[in-house]
Image (tube, rainbow, N blue to C red; front, top):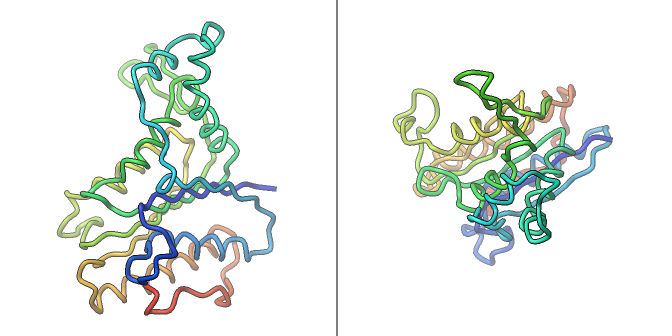
Length: 236
């Protein structure tokens, strides 16, 4: 059995009485996961909701514990790193990592950055050796796939887009994913949310189509069932 690690980072949930307040990135993530689990393979899911339950931020005590040799850590230091150890174990167990997140101020939410800071950790997910010259960091893990599902209020953040230089979400996560052992990176995004026009609705439709096609690509099933449906237009 393989493992999918699903991470949701939006501060919004799926159950707001007002449909327009429901998280677009969470809906897309749930759709992707439902399509994935509908395939004829056996996968377990680990769900980590950093949007509604943010990890703690790094602190001086946390940094001190990380750079103390494991065999010399005090009990308080071990406690300080307990959450980090748990989050890292979830990454280690995962074959596929699915991250859903909105773009906040042209980057990732603080809660998602806190998650990355907890899991990208020396001697756990990467090693450090000055004998490697100017590139001393090397990932410890390998062979993982990451699917990034995003939503943003504006548009044109992709390669060649009018806001490409303002995109500090996807490129940042792609860079960090290297230290999670990610070798295959895929990104699907919904744009134009603040405009709420036909372009936004077309972007939603395109994202759900791309998500379904990506499931087919990753599973080798080119005929992914359409029985698992995207939300109706008035639910976006």
